[in-house]
Image 1 (cartoon, rainbow, N blue to C red):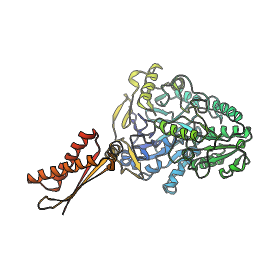
Image 2 (image 1 turned 60 degrees about the vertical axis):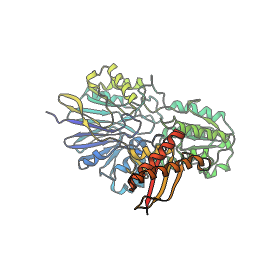
Image 3 (image 1 turned 120 degrees about the vertical axis):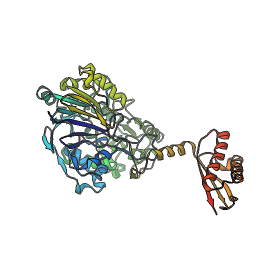
Image 4 (image 1 turned 90 degrees about the vertical axis):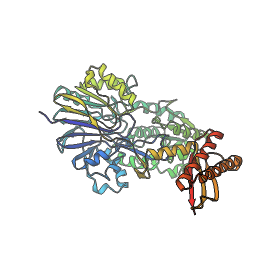
Amino acid sequence: MADRVRVVFLGGLGEIGRNCAVIEHSGRCLVLDCGVMFPDPEMPGVDLVLPDFSYLRERSADIAGIVLTHGHEDHTGGLAYLLREVSAPLFGSALTLGLARSRIEEAGLAASTQMIVLADGERRNIGPFDVELIPVTHSVPHGFATALHTPQGVVLHTGDFKLDLTPVDGRRTDLSRIGAIADGEGIRLLLSDSTNAEEPGFAKSERSVGESLRPIFAERAGRRIIVACFASHIHRIQQLMDAAAATGRRVALLGRSMLRNTALARELGLLHVDDGVLIDVERVDELQPGEVCVISTGSQGEPMSALALLAAGENKRLEVREGDVVVLSSHAIPGNEWAVAKVMDGLARRGAEVVHSGIAHVHETGHAKRGELATMIAVARPHSFVPVHGEYRHLLAHARLAIEMGVPDSEVLLCEDGEAVVLTDEGIDFDGEVPAGYTFVDGVVGDVGTGVLRDRRMLAEEGVVVVVVAVEARSGDVLTGPEIITRGWVHAPESEDLIDQARAAVLKAIDEAVGDGAWDADTLRRVARRAVGRIVSERTRRRPMIVPVVMEA
């Protein structure tokens, strides 16, 4: 009887981000990716959202390694936090490890972390795991699908992928190797990217964006062009630089990650540009507007990003002027729409023409659409299937597609974060759950929980009322107060009558409590909160946080 193989999902199933899975057999673990998720509007003050690492902490001695499928933050951004708690070597392409290294260095963990570069098609033993890296095309170069040759057959994780037949670097998704595995050993379990499972057809080639960018540059001769895109999208940056050079423009880079990533890509031979084309952003004012192209970070409207500061007129290195052209070469990540719209509005107020994906083909997805997902299933011919990487509706659409493509209904499992599946000689089945809640980062990891977020939402939506009163400990007589302090409920100078009523209600409630012989601090806090709450509800129909402070003297 062959050893059982278990797959545990710690993130990325039911959301966009936090991608992290664990493959287990022979008593060891292999971690596949460790990403972050960006907070939504219901998480005020939160910087990042991590997977729950408690399961990995428990199994830390069993972790053979961490394999990274590609360099995006939703797959690598959590490493600096995980590596504080577990020690394991990292495996990935040179670019993926280079992109991850900066975060790890910032955390002071680079010296203690072993990083092992893997090449396209390389097959390597990591502990008991026989791991093969298969090239796939995505919106960051050198992504991998991961084929795990296990005692229960091949487990194939596609990573993020698309089937681009004319990629900028010529590196296509290696369907031939996937087909060869299917024809040979067979693929026991396919875990496949579900992001665009609801989108019909096939994604366009990344080259199509370059074809759209060139006329945008040519038709705006004499005007300065500023383009915002992901700093990891090296192929997009290459096409922007080519379009700029073809129209006689010099290129300036804006944003720390843009400078860092382009330097890394040039060092690895993935980005090609003549030194004479690049100039420092401080020198753009020395050139005529039509001779300038600035490539910037901040396409998602991040509050302190280069583009957001430009829109607010607060960027110290560059200023948007009347007549400038700003191209947002990206789609808004779900949840970021409001922030992106705010940045676009700010740019328009400064006199810029804003070109975005809603009016021009300046972005193309890096994720496979339904036609490509069906092709992957047809080539892989998996015995079993679990959709990964996507919100629940994406996973559901992908599961239904797999069944349409001939995978037996009983072999398609729809999983969510925290669930595990197991492969045995008898088949595939669910195998319990592990902790997989959100871990919030707000300066310090883990000091913010759901209770804190609930309080923050209440404060943001309804405000706070603080009641301060001092009483004589032995008699319960009120010595000073009650003082009513409010923030976000009513504006005190304009609501003196309402605050006076609240003050009188608290005094009356305290007098009644003392008259009943109960004047301990806990009792007085309860009656003060109840009295203020009644006035607040009756007069304003609001529910601010009420904080009673009773001091005994």
